[in-house]
Amino acid sequence: MTARADLGTRLLIATHNKGKLEEIAALLQPYGVEVISAAALGLPEPAETEDSFVGNARIKAHAAAQASGLPALADDSGICVDALNGAPGVYTADWAETPQGRDFTLAMTRTWEACEAAQAAEPRKAQFRCTLVLAWPDGREEIFEGAVGGRLVWPMRGAEGHGYDPMFQPDGYDVTFAEMSLAEKGKISHRADAFEKFVKHCFS
Image (cartoon, rainbow, N blue to C red; front, side, top):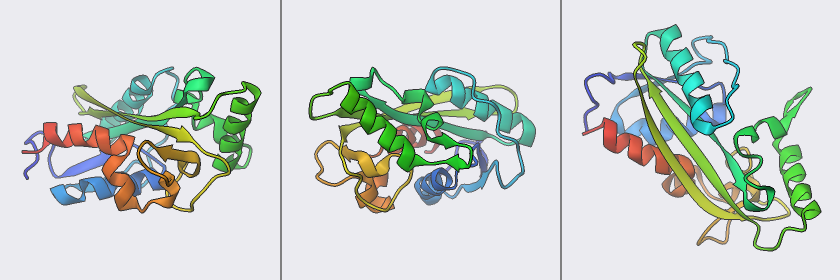
């Protein structure tokens, strides 16, 4: 497959999240695109001030593209729990914030306790959602969205993955994302869904 002429062979991934970068690099590896992160270029993390996945992905993608002069791909993603009216949603990472950095064990515990307080019925349905925004230095953009449904489980299970993976069991499976290999998760995840649309559009 060849990349679109205006995509080039270097793609900036607008993230400082090592786990997310590894996942994206693995998804793009077959297409001969060199992936570089915003962190590797020393770019600052812009404030994510929007209340939607697409809004925050736009902020990150355009900031990175303008600062670097490269096409930039940003991902904004999170888990949306039905019983919590879609929370934590766009605030997924915020639920993990502590003075010492992000603690997703704390975030998962908080999420489960919120379901308990709401007396949420089983199965406690949830969706991982991902929005990708591809931006160019001239201000153009393209948007790709993906999702995967599943349920919350407790206690947490598995040591792979990152974020909320240990408490999310995708529909049709009896293991959590954190009990899957990166390759297994990469076939069915919300990010894989969005990337499939991205790849179809950008590579031929």
